[in-house]
Length: 400
Image 1 (cartoon, rainbow, N blue to C red):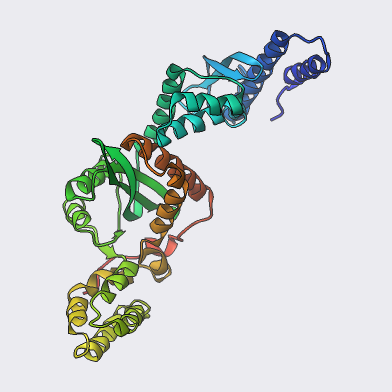
Image 2 (cartoon, one colour):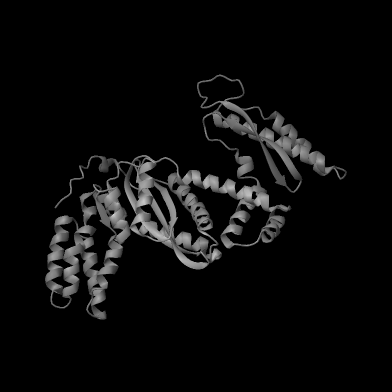
């Protein structure tokens, strides 16, 4: 469908003429900018709903629903805009959301203020440099609430069916009751029915105690998560207990990478650490579950005299690391560890390193959520993570 861009082009031409006129008045240019942005937003809405005003066609996907007033600060002054609305659908014009330097810079500056605990005066300096204007504490507070509201929607959005659920936590330093503490940030991501990864949960808590993990997992249930075939995580005591209470019937795959690290702590001397690590790799790289169990018997006999503590630990724990063998072979490499979440945690640490110390839990969660949204958007627009055709035919009968 070809849209009428005559009005938009006319306004652009007038703007260029005004800018080339040395006697142009600033208020005239500001008025033109308002007209251009308002016209661009209307055209964007037409493209979004696939229809011109009052047009009837079979390709229309939505209906215009009036306008919402918006104040936009620019180097040319304050613009009074009319943001088009769409009934029943989420729509926001990219020409002001992604194209507006001042809005983007403001959000970043406000986030930095709360994350670094800097003064409003410092934020004023940042925004003056980037946007050519100052902001009051009231404006800063209002913008922060806007950002938090956006992130709250992401963290509390309704969920659907997921095949695999990955759980882990990372720690960030924050101020709490006059002290500096390491606060846990609980994170969950899942692989959906189409084989795409999604960030599905994030929450801050004082620790990884069972009560905090249980509240986190229960929040996923309340948001509608269902169909989980396997949970993948490390063997943290609080997480284990919470998982057993919230998802008692869902099989659990203990992270093989962390299991290998745990196994080395049972070496009776330093020289045995690498042989034990190799033994664990041999088990996990078996061609099937039967082969893995044969390898366990061989390794137990090999180490029973030189590392009996390791053999005892192995026989008491190894089955928790072999659950992935009951799932499609092509999925094994992706579902046997929490390495995907470890990479997410490293990115969070990299992006939050500049903050050093967060002034409160809210500021930490704010930046973490921003990073997670970026990762989430990359994942859902990326190629399929796991092919599910074979998986759908699997009965998931656990081999014992």
